Amino acid sequence: MKHTDIEVRGLLMAALVTVVVLIGGLVEIVPLYFVKSAVPPLPGVKPYTALELEGRDIYVREGCYTCHSQVVRPFRDETERYGPYSKAGEFVYDRPFQWGSRRIGPDLQRVGGKYPDSWHYVHMNNPRDIAPESIMPAYPWILTNKLDTSLTAQKLKTMQRLGVPYTDEDVTNAQQSLTAQAAGIQSGLARTIPEAQADTEIVALIAYLQKLGADINWRNQP
Image (cartoon, rainbow, N blue to C red; front, top):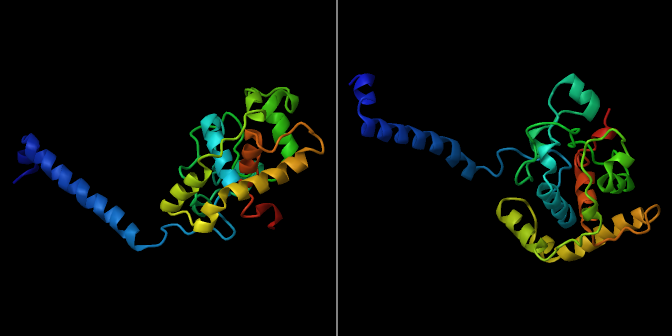
């Protein structure tokens, strides 16, 4: 049988294409069930804390990924500006990835520790107070919106089912962990911004931004 004989028979062509796609899918998918992880995490990379996970959801909700990428490409102009290029082992606990598709604002994959918490607070309230030429919109409501933590434990549990190595204790103590970390951030903010409240969305967002790139400790590497 020649290929032309197959191409003129629509049902036969569709059936054979389906078989090929199924075989290819099985070859790609089945091995993943027999390995613990296709991409092991880099040394030092840890899952998000409860507060950081909530902050990440705020980041996604506000569409920050549409203007900020989170992947440094292996080009000198990028590594000179943002730090070491991104590696797969950094993203193993991201569900979903925040790589982005364009870069209107700077890449944020290495922003953790670059600025103090107070910088992020002021910047989110009005970016022009930090950079007069900035085109980023202001997000003042994040500074006053109360953080909804009613689903925090459930979020960790869902991530646990997706393969993120949270323990049952992490899930049970999610609220306590979140409150403690938020209080620490608020305590630091209070030195210069006394009106900052620990139970607001900005605190969770700051926790998430300060997490980005911090685990691999690249600033202290030669």
